Amino acid sequence: MTILVTGGAGFIGSNFVLDWLAGCGEAVVNLDKLTYAGNLSNLASLQGDMRHTFVQGDIADTALVAGLLAQHRPRAVLNFAAESHVDRSIASPGAFIQTNVVGTFALLESVRAYWGAHSEADKATFRFLHISTDEVYGSLGTGEAAFSETHRYEPNSPYSASKAASDHLVRAYHHTYGLPVLTTNCSNNYGPFHFPEKLIPLLIVNAQAGKPLPVYGDGQQIRDWLYVKDHCSAIRRVLEVGKVGEVYNVGGWNEKANLEIVHTVCSLLDELKPRADGKLYKDQIAFVTDRPGHDRRYAIDARKLQRELGWAPAETFETGIRKTVKWYLEHPHWVEQVQSGAYREWVAQQYAA
Ligand code: NAD
Ligand code: TYD
Image (cartoon, rainbow, N blue to C red; front, side, top):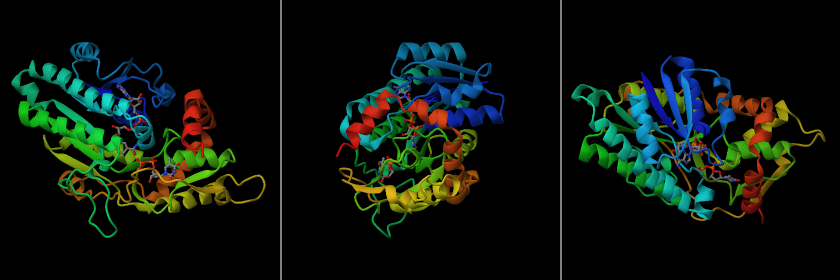
């Protein structure tokens, strides 16, 4: 038995592949384009592991994907591949439309052709699991109920709009063609292998480099944080026992304002790796111009996943963020290696002012 994972060299995909192979013997074919966000060193511990086959390529390459499906005959396809950074989607939306919309469409077409040739019994057990985000639901006001699976779609950024489009395509392939799909919409993840353009790893990396810790606007925007390995366990659970055609929201009930996150990371660094000059990391906080169209609050209602599939996160925010900061301190080589020329160019452009 084999599964095909797309985007498995990125943050969540690589955590998923590592956890999957640590927990079971089933082989993984990992298709990843290796954009700036894809990093094979995330998968270095799998070197020589015959259960992992890495293929560099694009989900939009239908000939490549058809060949992989025919060769490896996976029982499931899990689609992690995406352009994922909101700020980049504001600066250059084209790549988001290409991968998240056109790419997902092309992948669905390849999978539909492969699945359609199965026997009725194998058709019924096949799964296409699409990994999506809570950002498709838009922004919540203070006191509004957390996003449930039936919340209206109201995406506000090119990123969330492109993910919303992909979710709709996945839904349509189930309703129109009967493709056995599952969709998960998860809140903000954090943990090992998180690319340091996103808030938490950026803070850890900048703090140690003596650079400013950029806080957009007033820092009171709220995100609902989930440790990445809890997201991976939720995906495994949904793949195993999720009901075909259903959507499952994934979250850990950890709403935090950005400024609180910044202070938590600073305190952990003060404890685990104090500044050489005896000052506190919070002295590096810098309030900068807000993100255009910045969503104010996300919150996930994950009760359906808990009630129907029995999933619950293993980490609290306190345990997960401590593990995360420690992981970054213990992996300076990984941090150094992902800060390529392309990364430095992005940081220079984004934080120029
Ligand atoms: P990431 O940017 O770290 O990784 C994306 C991976 O996809 C990279 O390895 C990249 O090389 C690959 N990729 C990009 N375009 C591709 C293409 N056309 N073909 C094949 N591979 C391609 O993203 P992530 O944070 O790991 O997110 C993974 C998925 O989870 C995304 O679909 C994202 O929308 C979703 N998600 C992310 C979060 C989060 O907090 N990071 C939360 C909820 C949902
Ligand atoms: P981010 O990690 O980019 O995730 P998302 O935009 O998908 O939620 O950002 C998390 C929050 O942190 C978001 O409200 C934007 C804010 N933020 C900053 O304040 N400063 C930064 O430098 C970055 C990258 C994000």
